[in-house]
Each structure stands twice: as structure tokens, then as C-alpha cells.
Image (cartoon, rainbow, N blue to C red):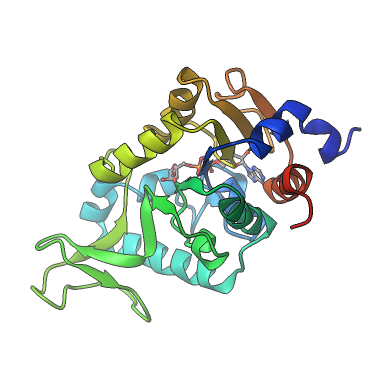
Length: 248
Ligand code: APR
């Protein structure tokens, strides 16, 4: 079987090396090697609940305590793990290409901990709550159970985007501008089934950008991406940085 190096097309290395505007879209697969469960993988179940059933406004309305317990548990999980080579390679790429945007669907903040700076967290993050009444945002620390607002006393919710909800318009616009104007877009560790993030790669392709997908398995994007490298995000991205820019 060919190694990672042989699976990365020469053209991808050349195009990345010459890129003026680089964008990267990441999903749960990028954090999988840190030990964070993916959404649609077999490790995604929590107490027999599917993430897709808990991450909804309806689930929160029906049982806010259950949904909060899941988020407190997820916050604890991500605080106990470390960024992996995929996060560090992405942070390294930001230093190599000045016009850089990282668009992440991940809410775990591992990119930030690995040193990435220009990040659009389009699905929010696990470490903040938002008030359902007055929209105040508060940092979560040792919280357990239901979270209430210090300002108005209202019930707070996790500051993430749930299924069926709209993304922040301003962030989404920035994400489409970054991917649509990129000459190189890396799409790593996402199943490419959740909109509108799944459309970002097509915005890059329509504008002539090179789209390199990195995933363990083929996705709905695979037939359309300029190239797909099947493999672990950590290994592939580390090798890609090495091939395009020499020593890390
Ligand atoms: N390296 C590369 N890819 C991996 C790895 C790995 N080590 N491990 C898993 N993957 C791939 C899987 O093959 C899959 O395609 O990562 C993808 C993870 O897909 P999902 O679990 O669907 O996660 P994601 O695409 O981020 O989900 C998008 O859906 O549930 C909502 O809001 C949530 O942000 C999330 C969104």
C-alpha cells in the first residue's frame, strides 16, 4: 500500500506552496485523534442518545437538564484532551500563508489551544452559554446542571448552533468570502453533509480554487474535490506541511 507521501498529489503541494489565499474547513475528524468523539461515528453516542437527537432546540425545550448534562460532559472531555498534529499543522500553515482563514465546525477550541488565531467558529463553542432571554454571553467554568443568567436570571443555553438553527450571518458571510476567494482550500475531517458548511468547498471550486479533501473515508464531496487524500488528518496534514514548506 502506498504511504501518505505518495498519496498527496504533486500538484497539491505546488499549489499550496504558491497559495496567496489559503482557507481550511475542519470538522470533527480533525479532533478524533485527540480523543474527541465524532458526531456520526460509532463513538458519538452518549448514554444511548444520538448527538443528532440532543443538539436541537426541541430537545432543549423538552429536557434542558439532559441537554446541559451532555454539554457539561462534552466540555469536560475536551478540557481533558490535547490538540493533535492536525491542529498543530493547521496552526503552522497560518504562519506560512499570510492571507489565511480557518473555518471550523468544531466547538472544542482545540485549534485555539494549538495556536491558530484567524478562526471562524461557525458552530459556536462549548465554553460559553447564551441567555435565552437577554442574549448575554457567559463563560462556563465549573458549572453543573441548568445554567442561569447572572444579568436577568433567565435560562441560558449552550452557545452553539443546533440542528435546524441558522448560523451567525456575519460569520457565515466571512466564511463564504474566505473559501470563495481562496486559491487553495483544505477540507479536513468533515462528513460534508451538514449545510451550509458543506457548500463552502463548492464556492472555492466555482472560483477556480484547488480543493484538497482529507478524510478517512470518501464523502459526498469526494467526487467534486480537486483531490482527496484518504488517511488520518494528523498524518496527512503533517506530511503536507513538510512537503510544501520543508521542516516545521
Ligand atoms: N482523520 C480524518 N478524518 C476523520 C478522522 C481522522 N482521524 N476520524 C474521522 N474522520 C472523518 C469521518 O470519516 C467523517 O467523515 O471525519 C468526519 C466526521 O464527520 P461528522 O461526525 O459528521 O462531523 P462533522 O462533519 O464535523 O459534522 C458537522 O454536524 O452534528 C453537527 O454541528 C455538528 O459541527 C457538526 C456538524
